[in-house]
Length: 546
Image (cartoon, helix red, strand yellow):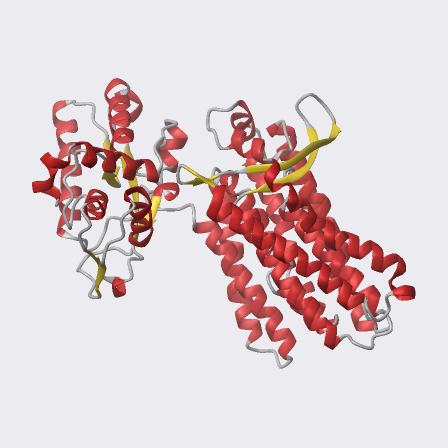
């Protein structure tokens, strides 16, 4: 979409600043370099906020889903009809959010540096390096092609080397910059090999196409990568693990964390820039960008989880032993980034079939479990073909909404007739989460099970809306307000009910992998269909739902 083309100026402004200050700064802008660099980045920051407002609040969402928009794309190198290196700009929730983070943090560092670095002999050079770093980070997060990501990834490494070693006459700073450069280059070698593996088997380097091909269990590319193996692991596992290796280097994950504490040898504003949600979150961004593919490989995702968890714990323990405040902050950063990696590693996992059923549960849950035992007994004694499917929260038209049943219909109906509701439990904040499955998706699955029972016989599957179709009560309220145009009074009941769950999200990975089934209707469609049903049958339903 051409109306997002102005985003191109966001990385170009710091690039232009780098060129001007790098070539002419020490001679012509020795004193004004800070003002030039700060003004340039202030403009880029304003443009970032404009882009965020346009995307999140104007035209980025279509039918309740934020769209991926390619604002600019052109082919740089064409290797074959299917494999090329494209340069361009991608606009989606992750890139827009990171635009705000990088420009805002970098702007604050630029402002901080105006006073902190005043009087430095190489003042203009310093701001040139800052601008190069910012340009590299912005280019990285806007890339449409995984090789384009790698190019800016290396530029981030070069610019961080220059900034950490800014005091080049100080031996400790030189040593720290060399360590950071060598360690991250070692990690980036793995990243490059991972890119080549993904490109070879995926048939493309375009991030969008790569995700599309490798998230379909029936695609030739996915089947090829999962069937080919090396040392007992599939090529998909190898490709993703090596890509994560690059991210682990940038984000200072164990055992590639050794460069980060020494990076404090650079100027204090540089330490702030590297640690404050810019360079060290590049690895987190990389995993998040390719998360749909990571979610298709349990081994790679598990590896991310364990590395993140161990890094978080290790860094926290080491931080307790440090006496230098800057090194304490370095290990603290490592610990928090570890938490982020850990969160990405486990975020795909909702309630799976592997969840233990031992221990106490609600009476309602007990009745469900006992029904499964009856099914298994009948199948065994009478030779029946049977399968067990554990559904999440089912919703759709013709469901009678009550407080403890049919919550989606209840929420929609109360908004339709402008009646009050309550957020119950967990402080009365409405932050408990459920995944929601459209009844038509359930019917489609049951029809499939009836006609292809051989595929399901004797198996247990968890089936629900999944992470993509999960929502808190707060989010459900926002959807209902949008669909009905009505706002209602919602009270709070702080006390949590016995056996209530803060979060329930179903992991559909097994049935998606084995059968290829997944929900077709999104969250907003569920609410819309219920709203239209109530609206078209208002008189008949008023006495029941109102």
